[in-house]
Length: 147
Image (cartoon, rainbow, N blue to C red; front, side, top):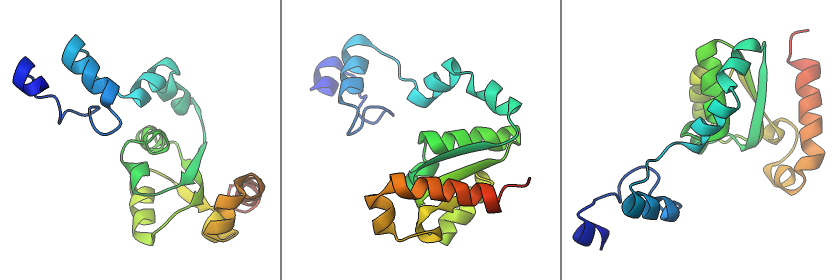
């Protein structure tokens, strides 16, 4: 209807997809402009400046996977670190494949550590991340960060 009545083909624009119902409506009916939520956050948090001032950045999420490298916050932080030549370590519940790991390390992270397979099974990591994450962080601090 928007294309027919308003002569506007906005359905394929970034931000108007499955989760972009509000964005689609605002774009079509109010001529709104899209901006990445991460970009807004990074600008207001002065993230580039803070990363440049750091010696090491540690970040993480439930799973380091393909979506991490497709615009999610953790991947975007790691990309900023890579550009600033600041090492970024990722702590994750799980990470799926060695091929993805190589791609992520090559382009984003200095190292990636996971509760699974490093410390436990994926099922236990998902069931009780509050138990496993402190253990992963302690293991990384004790065994993998240069003193």
